[in-house]
Image (cartoon, rainbow, N blue to C red; front, side, top):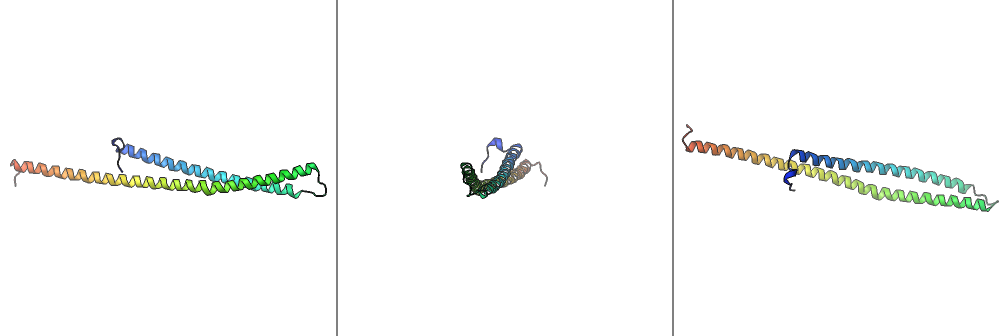
Length: 152
């Protein structure tokens, strides 16, 4: 992983981590909202199914009037809508939440990899700086020794 020069500072590193944290929190918020919507839709589907059952149960074959036929048809349509809503809710649950959870997991993994790579690069940089300091000190020592300034 390579970084542009403008992304090598501590401030940029913290900003990138902050952005990644925000994205993860935002996706988790979306997940909670979708989960709540699924719960509401399921409850609504159950309520509609119960209502449809009451309507259909009231069907009285003894007095079959156009009004009772229309009412029975309304009950059947409510039941169909209830099933459709339940099926679509299950589909959203099965597909959207799974994909969203996978995206959240990937974002967390990318954040972890970025942080580990950043730590690794900082460690290498510190080692190189230490090596340069040691070499500089040895070079200074050699210069003084060569000039005879050092008493042994």
